[in-house]
Length: 362
Image (tube, rainbow, N blue to C red):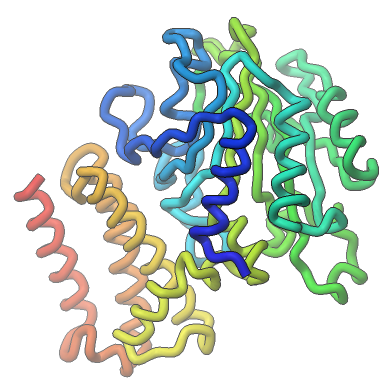
């Protein structure tokens, strides 16, 4: 079984062999873009390249980008810990083309990586494509559908609306149709009971999107109109944690080696066993996820605080961690080591102290 480090490296090696320059992740907290507070997608650091505002030093790039989604349009905060595949902070594996290759190569190389390198079964893969949008005057992306037919039968190539298959970073900016790759990791018995195509984009935890290939062709203006970009680009993002779940044969992102060391440390500290009680498992997943997000934010130079990005991190991650811990502790006497006398008072006081300390140091 591949470790998470091996999975990440295989991705980078795959695209390096295909002429991509490997670049480091941009900071998770953005300081020089008034339209964004956090890096919420791998393409953020390349926005000016897509818009043609500055030239690309490399026509092909690949990276693994730290992303944070705790506010705004792309925000899965309420699902984190409740389900098994959303996170506040996650890694986005991406390959990029700036006016170089386009749909044909992006689809071919994605297939080669997943099937030839990672050995994912062809029969477990479903793909989606943009089915068109009357409001924007855009036709269905037939080119993408025909390209996928070279690799799989038509019943596993599914059209979806703008909501699912037209990617936009925000209300304005670069955008375009996309093709998503989903993997069915259900048991053979479950697959026999219901075809995977019926579960694609239905929030099923084992029929899950792992990779989105976006074909940047337009810029969304403030008035809602679309303008064709000077050149066509490829912007892809594969969820690292989800990919690890698939390749390590797990049913949850939190069962992979990305999260298990942290979850087991939390369980040990609380005298609990992960996997025995749903409420306690949710609490440990939330705490593990949010600690990871906070740690990466601090490593990028952003402490939880009372203003700006620091406040969002504090309100979204620190407060939610404490809220979950309080709820858990109030119904579990075995958590007394966390707060021997008054668990609720202890948790609130701890948050206050932590916030005050962060604010004074910021």
